[in-house]
Amino acid sequence: MLAEQEIIARFCEAGHLVDPTVVSYLRERGDPALISGILAGIRKDCAVVLPSHIPSLTPKRDGIRFTADPLLEVVEGMEGSAGPVRQIEDYVSLFRNRYDCLGSLIRKRSGAIPIEALTHSSRFRDSEVTIIGIVIDVKSTAKGHRILELEDPTGTMPVLFNNGRDGFSDAERIVPDEVIGVRGKPSPEGKLFYADQLFRPDVPVQHAPYTPKNSGKVALISDIHIGSDTFLQEPWERFCDWISAADDISYLLVAGDLVDGIGIYPGQEKELTIPNIYEQYDRLGEMLQTLPSSLGIVLAPGNHDVVRGAEPQPVIPPEFRSQYPKNCTFVENPAAVSIHGARVLMYHGRSIDDLIGMIPGARYEAPAEMMEAMLKRRHLAPTYGRRTPVLATEKDRLLIDPVPEILHTGHVHITGISRYRGVLAVNAGAWQSQTAFQKQMNINPTPGQAVVVDLEQMEPQIYDFLS
Ligand code: D5M
Ligand code: FE
Ligand code: ZN
Image (tube, rainbow, N blue to C red; front, top):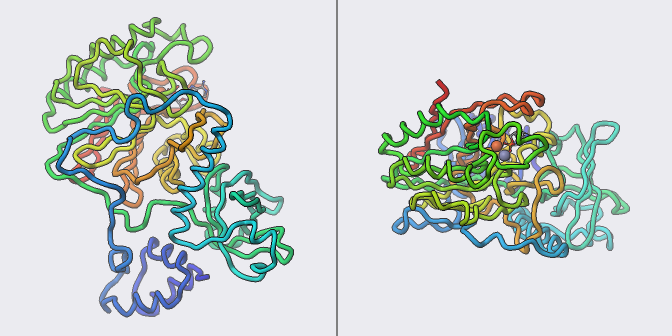
């Protein structure tokens, strides 16, 4: 075990500051000899030791890229891949798949033993070990420590995070059903595990985004809500005129809630200007017909759309698509699209409501922080059974694997941007002003904005069409 202070002090004594990412890498590795090795290779005049100074942290890309082939390709979530509603038993395979995939990401950084090895034998009782499992329950104790129940395929174990330890704030952010690793020691009887350190699947420290050359720009939007009496017709038209003239923008991606839908909540019919669901989709199709045919448009569903609410949500069915031009591609929610090899993971973002309710300090005004929470957990909707309905599928379709260049969400109607370990997180706002419900909830949307990303630079820019 290496404590944070100890690592910082070693670098300080040698006359260097040290980047927090390097500190967390060294904590995970837990080997003091590694620090000596790094110090030996650093120039004396180096002020801050960065990940780029460490050979094992040199940037690496995750997943295959297709630089020379199709400009826009649906990699995950193409039409027909969501599948039907299945048997309840499939939840077993869903969670098993989640554990296997995310557990193996953690195991790459820390060897682990099965929980059974702690409960059935005394061999490890006095040693520091790592266990990996799904969090099946988590709560605070009367003294403010965190206690959770961790389950792996061999058993379950209560795990205690002491609030006086390094990194307790990460432990406070543990949510049900996420996959974590914990390093620590079992109690003498093997009935409780004292955690020293928390591992999340996370984005690798050395993750390097792929930035395609001459690929132009992509506009990211969400939540158009056609048919609602709060749909902002004029800002939307200004946006359409603007994007038609912006010849450096090659793609427009929409992360769901294309229309306001019908019967989404009680009394919604009173807030609709287009009460027919076919006409809502037709109206959007007609609007998209006015955009240049060279603009590649990708349309994913959200919780207001006509498809089932459980995720993965299927593609908008053909009977609603008769008015859409050929340059429109319909995808599922979630979906991964590759643009000149840069991968954009599109997800409507219902789980943001859940995460905001569970993570201390989380706010609707900062949705991109919840996207970071997703990236750390390598999962789009870590907690099952709250406001995000998830379908039983054999494979967990909400895993974040491989790591995308851009994570694009919406749903909360508030623009937010963040960069986490090289991944650009963009929560796109809406084209609907504050609804009566959002007013009650004190949710203040930022409507009428589009986020444009230059793929070569991976630089985002917000454009405002409200006035
Ligand atoms: O959701 C837009 C935002 O408003 C999102 O953060 C959820 C919140 N919202 C809206 N309606 C409701 C209801 N009925 N219950 C809870 N939260 C709600 P959107 O998907 O556009 O409706
Ligand atoms: Fe919405
Ligand atoms: Zn929504």
